[in-house]
Image 1 (cartoon, rainbow, N blue to C red):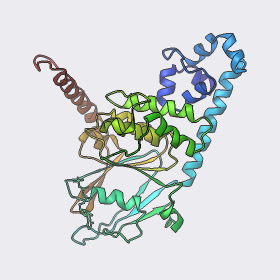
Image 2: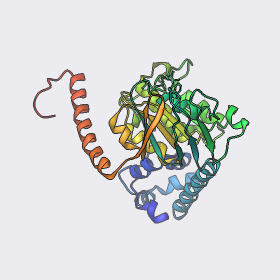
Image 3: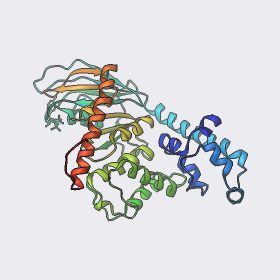
Image 4: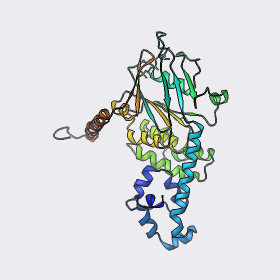
Length: 333
Ligand SMILES: Nc1ncnc2c1ncn2[C@@H]1O[C@H](COP(=O)(O)OP(=O)(O)OP(=O)(O)O)[C@@H](O)[C@H]1O
């Protein structure tokens, strides 16, 4: 394991494992050269710096591995909490039975597509509510194959489901840093300052437009709030299920946001009208008239098309930027 981490560059390491950064921040080693491998970085660390943090150079990688193994254990515990979510079909708006049994596992992204008003948000609401045949759709949600107990349905702490919805309005008079730090402290993490810094950095890497730690949460744009909440859910929330009601048009790096959540072994369900997002999931549910009309796995051919659509999207993004900069939209884009 030590050599795997040692051979990764720091930007790779921090990109794939957001928690890795906290280990170094907690040691006071926050400004590390990100282009270098971890092994080289450790070899080049100043002797006095190491003396200050009280750690031997040869022990640093081993301690880092222990820390990462601890993070993995925590993740497994969370996974043990919810190893599957099963949704049993109910009925569509006309009362026709849906006849499906859907099993969702940690680390999977499931997309929900269908025309406006076809019941996508209702489906997410059924999961959020852990419906037991008692919602307008008559669907039933099982956790680990069984009906969840009442405490789970009404829990305010340790909620199973975190929800990211399209409209996010903050009403608190706090800066982004204060807001996240309050959350970190309430979750009693070992180093709230370090995790707050990680979340703010991650959110900025997802958001199109940067914001600073002192930006009031009420002044964040839609995309920035969205990015902040995604980073927060990925790093701080213990909820194993994440429901996302549309992240298109939010001006954030959608692909990274999704893989970040899936990498944290969350069960991700996302309602979307965006074809790129719809093909990013492992499977998609197609809605009609309030019911699931079919379930499709993303095929290899669709994945190949996704690459093409992403290139088209990148071109359109370039046009959008050029328009915003007042440029003429002519020639190659
Ligand atoms: N199976 C159902 N039985 C009864 N009512 C339903 C059913 N499914 C959805 N509805 C109701 O239909 C309305 C529209 O559904 P919903 O808001 O979920 O659509 P949507 O696909 O999310 O639309 P949009 O894409 O515009 O957000 C809601 O009032 C919802 O409660």
